[in-house]
Image (cartoon, rainbow, N blue to C red; front, side, top):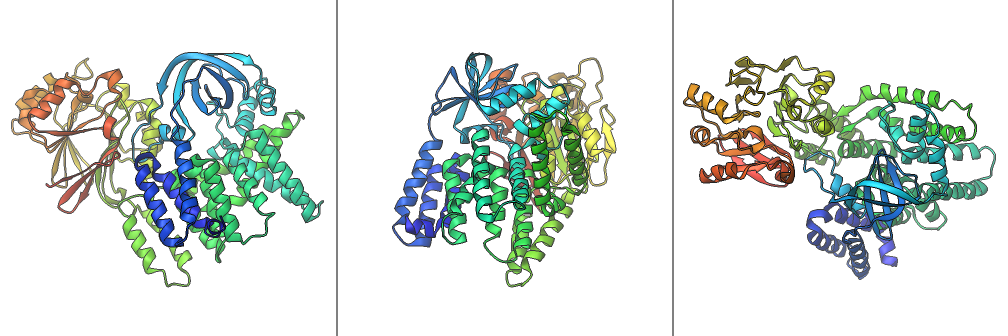
Amino acid sequence: MKNLAEHSTLFAAVLYFFLMFHDRFAAAAFTIALCFWLIRTRNRSVLIAGVLLGLTWLRISLPAQRISEGRVVSVSTHSAVVRKGLSSVVLYCAETPVLDSKISFHGDYETITGQKGFWAFNTAGWYNDRGIRLSCRGEYTVVRESRSLRGLIQRKIMRMADPEQSIMARILLGLTADETTLRSALRNTGFSLSGVLMVLDAMLKRVLLPEKRRKVMNGICLGLNLLYHFPPVLLQNLIFRLLAEIDVPASVRTGCGLSVMLLVQPHVWRSAAFVLPAVFRLSALSGRRRKKVNLYSLTAQSLLFKSMNPLGSYLYGGLLKAGGFVWLSAFGRLFLPFIPVVSAAGILDRVYSVMDFFTLTGSILGAGLPFFLLLLFSLRQSTRRELYAVILLLGFQITGLFHPFAEVSFINVGQGDAILIRMPFNRENIMIDTGKPSQQRTVETFLQAKGIRRIHALFITHDDSDHSGNAGYIAEVYKPKFIITEHQGLWHGRFTDLLDLSHISDDDLNHSSLMLYGEFNGLEYLFMGDADEVAERTVIREYNDLQCDVLKLSHHGSNTGSCSEFLDQVQPVLGIVSCGAYSVYHHPDRDVIQRLMARRIRYLSTREDGDITVLMFAGINLVITASGKIVIMNP
């Protein structure tokens, strides 16, 4: 154990690496982690490290158990997590149950599945990391009322009137509601609670000696952990407070604290509540703390949120204290009705609104990342390398250098279409359809990750909600100069041209769908919307030499389109199917798949492969899917 403690920071890194890849490559990640540990330490502590990694692996791989009753351990709007022993279920219900009450429930059980995507939130992964693999949609009855403090707080808040009820629920319980407009930083009770500790510590500093103040703060931290059932931010704080009582070097304390946190709550490896505080603690181990904190914090923001806010990083400590002050005001409001919580929260909300202007959208995980790393490597000997690295990071983010190549992306929006055509450095961005309203967050995250601030042209193939559901949102936020919803023949952009092949216009929306043709980097594309076989036959009669390399199949692969005559003429190399769950929609149709196979046309579907992107390089096109498939297509 001594050797393990001496290399605790290394063990935390190895454990984090294992947790990052355990979903798909658990055995390989386990082997690589242990080999790396052995090479770096060259001692028998690899046995202890292996046991700890194995126990973590076993814990996060426990099979799902169906339960019909249990204790409510967390709640959100219209859902709750119910736990019994080591088994948990997400219960979707009309009315949110009270925290820590015991309930019984019944309904339809489903395995929690995620939506594959480069940038989409992985719902299944988030729940699976927490040992939750089943959901139930139904009704519940209360077996035993909650007597816990947070349950009492929830009941008291629910008796208040809006907007105070909504704001109090968000601040104290993390519950969100459509009626409120507070920013995301106030939705996360964890960061606010970290600010509470900072505010209370500053207040006690004036009245208590250091030794007494430390003990009181330890007690307050433990109390908040018990109240909120050990959320990641507070648990990490408590662990480091306890380790501070032990006389060990700071590096050992930091490594042990992060390792214990990952062992106790493995799911936090992808949580901002763990990553951001960990960045600050690791930055404190060496000199030039401020510059390193800025660099690491901005990088973590880009990875976690697909955006970064330099001003927010600089004001991080002050914002935490402000959030803590608002939390204390809300807690005091439970007992003193004259405290103006709504006003205090509104002021902080306006501060976040102003700070939004300094947000730089984009993720560093792009084709330009290797060039960024090479430039960082060239700065390794510089005495001001951290400052130059921050400037370089901001420069890449602002100019879009992390995503320097043109691309055509088929965004996985379930049963619907959403296609993005990007020119290098976002010089021209075109969207064809926007998915259904429930997929707004998916579309927003994808555009944000690419650093897109403006859509230059928006094409809506027809008015079905699974194609036009987010058109209003795109028009409001991304201000497209052109919004095309009707047939107009050839459209000229600055760098791209799109030709609508169809001119059919009647009451049948699918029959009248836009059918767009474009050529990019030597490949010909056909975007078919929901056009039916009548429209397809009309088009091939009018354009008797029409061919393409990439065909976005019509109507999500339905048998209403992709007829034999059409496929025989256009002869695509690759077919793209944008579709949702087969058990619900039965897309793509088996007859359509047989037609593709008979003509040796390879196809990819967003349901199976997630987001599908065609990256354009000089003389070559690289098809990459979120599921890990790679296809090379020459012009």
